[in-house]
Image (cartoon, rainbow, N blue to C red; front, side, top):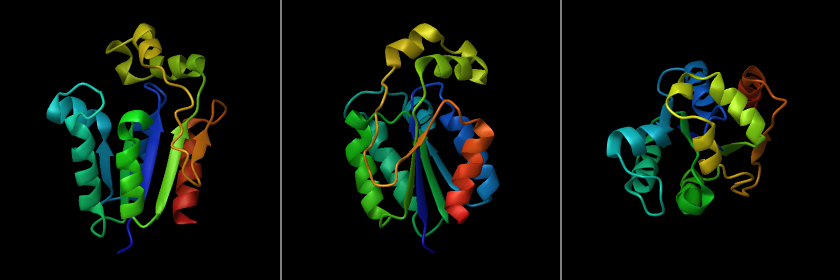
Length: 165
């Protein structure tokens, strides 16, 4: 089996997790979803900083899926400064059978999306501003920028078209 790696990144509140879960549901059983928040916050309870334990574990879980799962989705803020080297090693490991997406939204749009999500009670606009890191592109070939004018449904359709096309 030739596995495909899907990387979904962007600022907190932009819609990454919602998109990744919807994509996993559409792609079906055996699609591996590796969520940065689950690994870092729930499994390891570590802070998001350079060299944190979640970086290596995210890589190991994603690598486990290669040749076992048709699709491996890695999603999260995944700041390039902390996670870029690991993500680039995954790109190589998956023989460049990758699809990379970045939610390139304005801060205002991010706040709107966050306020309509289930996480709105966990943190607010002040936290979003403190974590804000715009234009944090990986800079890999084929990286798709998802913009303010694209609805959640349009983003999902685009991804499914690219993956199954």
